[in-house]
Image (cartoon, rainbow, N blue to C red; front, side, top):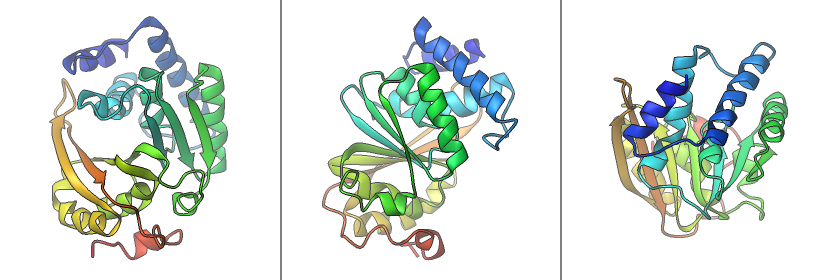
Length: 238
């Protein structure tokens, strides 16, 4: 697994130190052990974990979207992606992992403790509710989300967390190009605008990925995000 991860990172001009590699090794062990009890991932082969979970999670670093001193919130983190790999490679950035499912929260908290990730906080709750909490609303430099739904849904659940001047980063596949019109309409309603779409294959693979970057240019209106479940049922971009 190490060679696949390191080869991919080298293609992006990034490197792992030994402590970071040991964190990824322990993360893999914990994820596969917990996966026998709760549904964390269908991807269990070491090569695929390295590429489809770890490398994919780390893609924003290749485009300079996350750096030292930044505050980052990972919405709907699930098994900890992309937040955990980003936190391992960015020890001088602060990460908040948001997850609604109690069993996954327990898993994430054990991982954070076992890996000694002092730059990570795990918060249980729905994004639609937490985004109205003063502790979190418009409090982050970057919000990331992976596999959270259509682009306009992702933006409604991420942009309210972002400070003016910060950005939301949506991890998507090739279908993101079809979703852009929905995302552009939603971003405008949420105080943002689509600033960039980074199109790339994961290094040494044919897996095509997209990072859609929405810049926060104005406060999000207080009515957003709407109640839990509503963004999926009535997407803003329709």
